[in-house]
Length: 625
Image 1 (cartoon, rainbow, N blue to C red):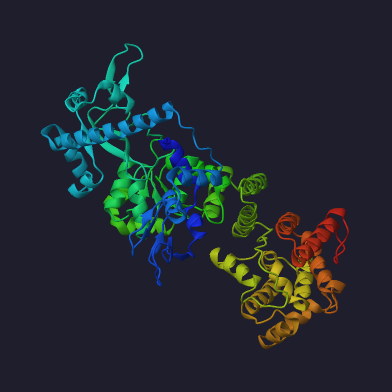
Image 2 (cartoon, rainbow, N blue to C red):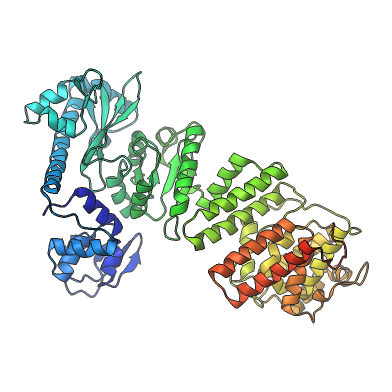
């Protein structure tokens, strides 16, 4: 029986081919695809490759899609294989009806008509009437080979298409069904949709023609026109150039999303053979799904103007709920006033490659977008900024990934505070596996160190005198770390952001540098290092009983939980908002993965936060500092 093409497309979209084949074949990653030993003939070395939507054995030549594999491997008929896969995908196979059969026949008829129309437009491009269009394309830097590869053509005066195709047995009704004839609603007269335009055939991901786009030459609006929705064409579900981009990705290319037809064509000619573009609309959910079927991390590259920035922001809003650890994006920013077409014509492939190499991760792009929209120059704006970042991470459907985004965004938020010279310069948490006795190598300190490196050179820290409560609290926090340096695994970024006087700042730098390479974060090792490095007097000053003795949590006899809770209690009087965020992140950690370490950390932070909020004095004894 004939099944609707829309149903078959949906079935293939919902069927992960590698998972289906992986039930019977042991597959291993090989670049962007999978490989294994062919199940259809005996072989010892793998020559069976699985791509996003098909498989091929270079040994015996077996190839096909998910339906074909189920039929060949299980000996099922076509409808049996479709029924099995549909049940797994949660789809209902359409009942065989005369209407369904007629719809499929009409769909195939539309494709046949479009093939004839494509040939018509290509012929006209080569005729004298198409000379202006050829000059335009060649003037845009396209070669004859590129023009032929993309099947470009020319639609001349209205009436020519219908007259030409009528001689091939195609009537007005068929052209109307294919979206090439429109009817004037006022006069009722029919007219050809495209005239005096350079024509761009639109193919689906399999390379089957489904519609056209046309660009007017000279003045006139609209500049670009796309074909209407038909039995074979949906603007929301298709992307220009996807059929060629799939091959480009398989050959090692980066999947790039640009804005227009000429951007796709120009970049392809420059060697970027995996570029696609939406079809006159903003990026849609369906198009994102198509992109991720081809590549786990496409690069969105929009024009370097205000409209391009708005398009990137809309794409971010759309993508957030759909992100998973296996499906991500990157955002490339073009120079102001440039698009991919103009950029490769002016600077060639190396310049455009540089733009792609500098593409931002979604978290970095999201941070910059929100900051650009909200600002961060006043306390009110920074509060709104932080709230928007938290809200954005909460829109990610994968809760584990959402928690990681929240941490990354807030880490950068606090780091940005330090770069702008705010008196509170916390740095976020940057979680990792608990490594209470281990050093920075392989432990959490590596993540703190990487965060420092990614933030660039550190700005000068604010300088305060030791004769105030802020300076005294900084001394006490340093004293706790001298006795319990393993706490650096969790407090390093917060500690680094504290304002200190010059002597204490030098000591803090020495502690940080030691932690980066220490085999174990133990007090004896730290003290020995500081003594040999000439910081003995600075250490004695921190551990001295004056101007006030260190609290019990700074004693070497203090239990780890007491030291940790005490450290955060004192820190909370210096930066309560940072402590609040630490509590929220610890709660998310414990909810996602409750272990003794995540529970311990949550308990210590919660106790410290509650003490600060309730007004319980810390070692300094001043609660309103």
